[in-house]
Length: 126
Image (tube, one colour):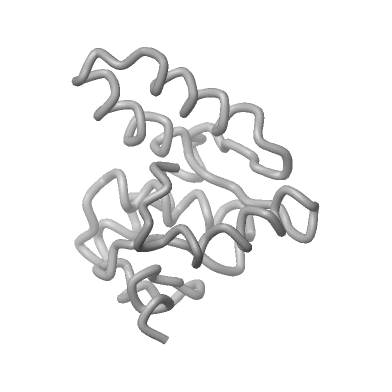
């Protein structure tokens, strides 16, 4: 979302394919929390609103609410993998929504075996 030049060429086709309906993405409400922190700390309401608009209105992007099933799965993941709560919620959301892969730049999530974890830095390096 920040259009980091190090990743832009890599993620642009992904988001174009999503926008064109080749697949649907799902994310957790935790994503909204995480992306709003920086602009809110900076007092940048325009950027915060841009992030809200993208996450809440993008075509073929669903934002899953934290449900009891997701919470239970997140607790299991925390217990099994010693994940931080936000990461466990993200992975649990993906699993509960039958995602086939998780796109992240957190290499620590590579330990997850229940779904394919696509780490941007690994993809960028080939």
